[in-house]
Length: 127
Image (cartoon, rainbow, N blue to C red):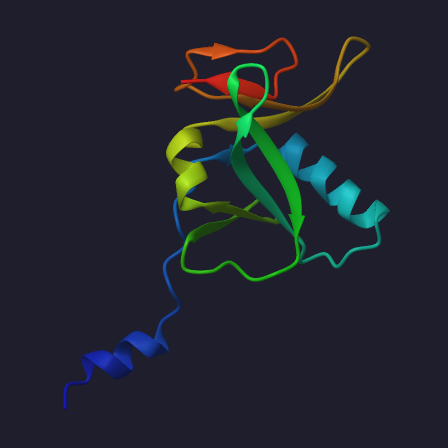
């Protein structure tokens, strides 16, 4: 019997390289929301894309308390677990998620290099 099987169980899995980047500001706001709702600190930011919105696709950020499954990509960014399903990652790869707070706007923003158009609301896009 080969030692390669036992050697693989002794090492931790490699950290996935994030294809969707969450800025420090966005992570801090997410942590604030989790704390405000009284949820455990291990609650993840679940990112997804759904059909709909003004431009055809809509970004979603949800609070995820379950572990990621085999169809998810999970990364740790600025102390926040970020989980995205592989189908959504196809549409969001390369996207940067930030949090803006100004007189004119307050909320998460998405900068997606694959989006050919966006809606004025900033939460829907087309490819």
